[in-house]
Amino acid sequence: MEGNDCTGSDGNIPNGIVYLVGGGPGDPGLLTLRGRDCLCKANVVVFDRLTNNLLLDFAPQARLIDVGKSPDHHPVPQECINEILVKEARQGRIVVRLKGGDPFVFGRGGEEAQALVAAGIPFEIVPGVTSAIAVPAYAGIPVTHRGIASSVAFVTGHAAGPDPINLNWTALAQGVDTLVFLMGVHQLPFIVSSLISAGRSIDTPVAVIEQGTLPGQKVVTGTLADILTRADQIQAPAIIIVGEVVSLHPVLNWFNAEAVLA
Ligand code: SAH
Image 1 (tube, protein in one colour):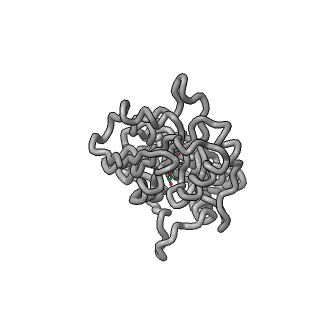
Image 2 (cartoon, protein in one colour; image 1 turned 45 degrees about the vertical axis):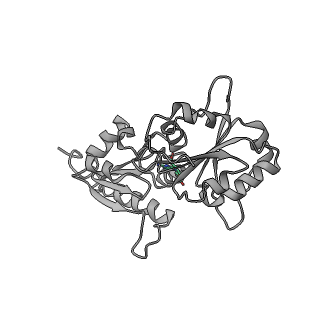
Image 3 (cartoon, rainbow, N blue to C red; image 1 turned 90 degrees about the vertical axis):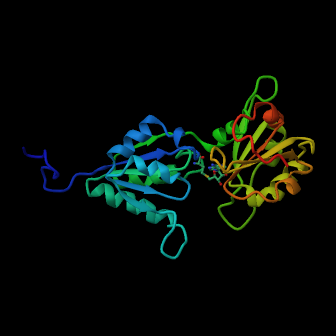
């Protein structure tokens, strides 16, 4: 039937579609059902080092493109990832762009979606369980808690350029109860000193959580006064959580009883 095979009625290959899928924070059980459905029907899966490779088992039929590392061992630049998504979809393929956590939380998913809009490629966003909430949860730290924290901010510790991150430290230190820093491990000294200078009490509890939701999860707790020495062995990827809610960790810690409590 005309137009009902792999080519459009004008003879061109019709656009495929790109699903920007949040893969969750690490534990494969935290992938959404919708995310799994997209993986099951994908022709191509574009993934990187921030997603758990076990999720790829849901797409045995798909061609896998690893954009976490290029042949020179550097991550594939964002423009090239955008081009891959557009090119594959233009071949009429179902493309899953699998991303860690949620695609729109510090995941550059917004930029990928903009590139798809510019190229006229249909797309859907499949939200994921963000590490910003799930990693504290697996450490028994609720990001809000009645009577303790009624506001939370997700903050990047990673500056786009060579200068330190440009944030409104006074607003963060004095106006938000719980602060969750992503991509902040290497900036921990700067984050701690900025919060103290901006007026946050040095007694404020802090947790640093490495490999959250995974078997290797490590949790280190302290305060703004001593977290730097306590967390000096922590490596990326890790979440830094600052606020009184961290004091619930010893009570609610349900996962990984072997957690490192320095
Ligand atoms: N879109 C992702 C975040 C991407 S930025 C999301 O919604 O979760 C990458 C940062 O996320 C890492 O530097 C780290 O701060 C955090 N992160 C992701 N997975 C993590 C994990 N399993 N444990 C601790 N931090 C994690």
